[in-house]
Length: 292
Image (cartoon, rainbow, N blue to C red):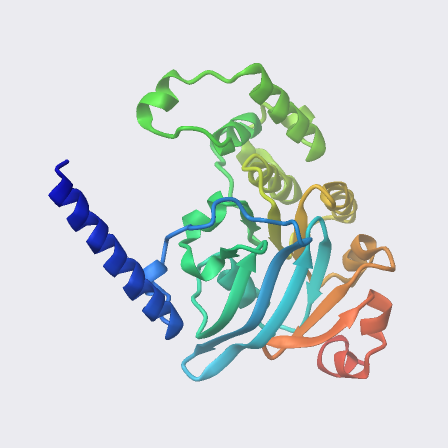
């Protein structure tokens, strides 16, 4: 490349950066959309996720109304609230599916989530589990976990790839963790509903997530499956940050163990926070959610 072209390119880059700065200052994030400028998230301050004044409106209805929320590194936080409280919209904002009208969303101290696309957010370590399990039903349990491994997915690489001993060990450890080691060669479509939920969680874990968003993970599970799921989540606490949206108060009680913080959402903002006993005794929470 000639010096003239290099100089012209540098000038264009400077103009673009200046325009991006102006656009962001006026609240327009499109100029930086999809650009990850800070590398890996920095968790030195102990906060994994921070939402400040997040507002989302749909046709005049405020799904989120100046929502403020902080999740610490390694924390397991349960979020409860009535239908329409904004729980799903909150997760949509965190994962880049929905762009807020206002507010900030930070992953660690340096990553602005509102600048990133959905796939970028997944790549930096945020995994989401929807209520309905999504697995490859025609493949075995083992093959589902193999596909979820972080590696080169291009056709040629996939065709000639071989699992390393380390990868095999990792799949085996995950199978043990999600209670599916005896089912490793079973076709995923033959699993029970609860087992499919565990498999999808295992697939997320293969992606090395730093933050897991789990939407009503025990809906439709048997009592035994629910108990095992609580054990699984508690074993992940500390190694990952977990945000669990759930209506099952018994399950929430098992996860919070009487002392962990529970967040109650209502009409798009935080109504109350505290231990499960604290929020269950809160008159406002009783009125709008728990009932008398």
